[in-house]
Structures are given as C-alpha cells and as structure tokens.
Amino acid sequence: MKKTIYIFQSGELKRKDNTLFFENEEGRKFIPVEDTQELMIFGELDLNKSLLEFCAQKEITLHFFNHYGYYTGSFYPREHLNSGYMILKQTEHYVDETKRYAIAYRFVRGAANNILRVLKYYRGRGKDLQGIIDTIDSLVTSSANAQTIPELMAYEGNIRESYYKSFDIILDNADFTFEHRTKRPPKNELNALISFGNSILYTQVLSEIYRTHLDPRIGYLHTTNFRRFTLNLDVAEIFKPVLVDRLIFSLIGKKQLTKLHFAKETGGILLTEKGRKIFIEAWDEKLKTTIKHRALNKEVSYRRLMRLELYKLQKHMMGEKEYEPFEALW
Image 1: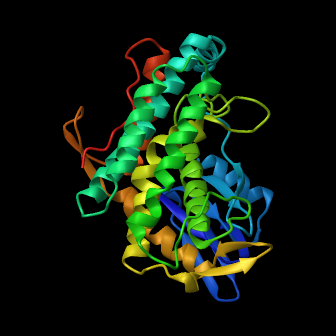
Image 2 (image 1 turned 60 degrees about the vertical axis):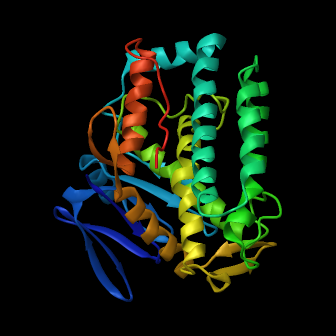
C-alpha cells in the first residue's frame, strides 16, 4: 500500500528529474515518488506546472488545507479510472428515490452500528453509558420508519446528538468538554479535534474514491448539489466513530494531546502545528492497523477497508450484490 505524505511547513515543492522534494530554510527532503499515493498539504507551498504534470504522470493526488486545517481542494490526475457506465449507474441510483433511499439508509445504519460499538466498548470499561446506548438503540429502530431522505437525516442527527453526550463521560477530562457541536471555527478544544479529524477522514475517503470507478460528486445521504463532493461525506459517516472518535479518546486519555496543543484564533479554538503533527502521526498508524476481514478471511488495514467499502458500493450499483456497510466487531 502506498503512503500519504503530510507537509505542515511552508516552502517549495519541486521536481528534479524523476524525483520530488520539499525545500525550505531548514533544508531539503526528498519524497519517494513510487511509494506515494497522495500529499496532504497544510503549509504555504510554491509549486509549478512541471511539478503538477509529473504528479499527474505518477498518479499522485495533492490535497490542500487552509490555515485552520479545513480541506480547500485537490489536484488529482486526469481520471484514468473514470467510467461512463458507472456514472450512469450512480446517477440512476440517485434519481430513483427508492434506490437512493436504500443506499442512504445503509449509511445511517452503518454509522449508528459503529457508534453503538464504540459506546459498548467503553461501557465494558466502566463508563456509565447504558442510558445513551438505549436511546440510540431506540432511534435506530425508529429510523426504519423514515420515508424520505430528510426524515432519515433527522434521525441521523438525533443519533449523533445523543452520541456526542457520551464524549464527556468517556473522556472525564475538564480540559476537554463537549458542550455542543460547533464548527468553523470550533468553540472549544474537543470540537477543534473533531473538526480536524473529520476533515482528514473526508479527504482520505476522497483519495480512495479517485482510485475506483466511482464519481465523488454523486452522494446519496448528503444531497448532490453545487457542493463539489458528497460521496466521501457519505462513506466517512461509517468510519468516523471507529477511526476519528476512537483516536480522539485515545490521544486525550493517554495525554498525548493536552490543552497546550491548542490556540485561540478568530473567535475559535484551533490545533497548533505541533498538535496537528501528533494527531496525524497517530492517524497514520491507525490507518495501517489491520483487522481480520470476515469475508476475505485475512488481515486488512483500515485504509484498505475504505477502498473495499467503495468496491461494495460499485457492486451494489451494478446489481451484483447488495451493499452492507462495514461494522466493527471488536
């Protein structure tokens, strides 16, 4: 599996013959082109057309994030895997309300099941979460009665609102309290972590979509409109609890991230560069972690699981096999 390279500092990204390197006042760092799948760029970067042509040739995607850690856009190679047939199938499953609902419902159910898995994991470690688990169980059961996508989204919102109430119980840390969900900018440290982690996950799923026949612009739970991408937001819902949230609980619980890794800025709270590096290092390790895949009967990484999720969607749309979302079983 190819690697993700993260660039936090500002400088120049250059091509020299058949290599890439990043350079600033601290020196020059070469990037292993053949082993690189994408670059996640957080710093201010100078680059030129020759470099972009080389990245396209080597099928390396560049993802850009702004000063606040939010995804702003991507440069990706001409879609060599683009499939007219698959775009037609994706569109067919979007414009047909019944088909769209069937996929959207599975995204909500998959996310809810993984949320419950996380809650039961921490309940098993002495956290008083039974009331929240019962509430979400009830919402999941009731969500089967939803008739439209907006109704389904309402259930999804209620499930997540109930789930967020568990964060303070799980963390039990006065420096990291949830209060309520705030974005752009986040109003406290925990919200800043959630926003940053989700942004990284959305981009990671987007990278995996580029390597399938699917088009990231056609989503099912999140409405396809003038927003650039929606399918990655859909698929990310399934992985948020087991990847982003579990990682946040671990980093805070082990005191790898503390209040000192955050800064106040423009009316909100943001991770410092050091804080981002700590999160990304742990995130990268998490993606490499392997679990036993029931269907394949072998160990696969979480990163690979994202790609497999997309392949399952392709098969669903081609009528080969009904899509069933990934559910963690630890």
